[in-house]
Image 1 (cartoon, protein in one colour):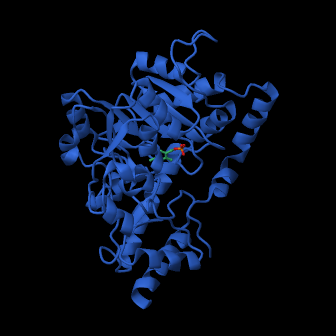
Image 2: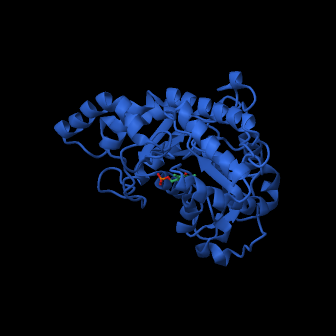
Image 3: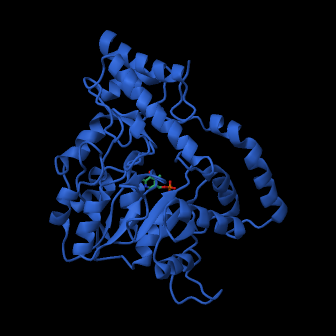
Amino acid sequence: MKVPLLDLRAQYAAIREEIEPEILQVFEEQGFILGPRVKACEEAVAGYSQCKYACGVSSGTDALLISLMAEGIGPGDEVITSPYTFFATGGSIARLGAKPVFVDICPHTWNLCPAHLEAAITGRTRAIMPVHLYGQMAEMERIMEVARKHSLVVIEDGAQAIGAEFGGNRAGSFGEYGCFSFFPSKNLGGAGDGGMVVTNDEARAEKLARLRNHGSKPKYYHAMIGGNFRLDAMQAAVVNVKLKHLDAWTEGRQRNAVRYHRLFQEAGLAPDPVQLPEHPYADEPDAVGKDHRHIFNQYVITVPRRDELRAHLQQQGIGCEIYYPVPLHLQECFSDLGYKPGSLPESERAAERTLALPIYPELTDAQAERVVASIRAFYREG
Ligand SMILES: *Cc1c(COP(=O)(O)O)cnc(C)c1O
């Protein structure tokens, strides 16, 4: 039995009948860029994220980029972020000529650790970009407190966390900007690249809408320089259909997380050698969805001999992945920032020991059992 890391074909089979007419309709209309479907998508995602405004853009990366651009962040500015994330988080800051300043993560959630924040703030700091990694939100109350105290803008990288909640409030609704990705492997994925920025600030929403279209207003008049960061109608059509299913899919992912927790404990693998991800309802499935809502874009375990385990699982036809093998502060392209191995120990430790397992909503009991049995065989018999 093969167990893929993610099975988008299973998802598509369940929604094909809803998606196909929408796509055909886009062809009938021949209106491919922005338009009413994008507007409907913006309204739906803004509402879903407890925000007033949204701006559909070309990717999650461009959502981050355009938010930084809207604040005029560039050379001489510093933006504090997490080193343990997908490259786009740090890359978007550096592309504008600003300096990413990496602050280490909390060991149990892998998110930016608020305790280290203030020490990283300088006279050049303009913004904080927390990442809600794997679908679990960073500690936004403490982060917002520090940001307010130092008058810093907060840009949430919620690419993996649409619909996640911290204290009942949704990802994207805390900071000045919330950024989402519709990359197909995200919980709300399109049929290609796409993304969105949400905000509660009308002036910022207006600026984002201009920047994504070369800064023009009215057409062919440019008081500011933007780019082509537009979302297309096809992506919006797909996202509009999928958004209706997102909560049910999230519940499926949460159920799978609870099931893994039970299976790993029954197999005698947790907490040693397999350290399970810490999340608010690991031990109390009844609390699923309450207060801190984890949407499980990934289910990530911490293990010894991680690379060997990964090879073993792959050989058994079980999908797994390392997110991420090299923290950003140790990437070659950031070597001039002066970080060294040991600079941010929790991120480096996570990069060496974590492994993501299949958690997608359609994963069956038998598949989950197979994943755990295979890990058991590696540690107990291998
Ligand atoms: C996927 C992702 C992005 C980038 O999104 P794209 O749509 O692929 O550009 C940014 N940050 C994080 C944390 C991500 O997981």
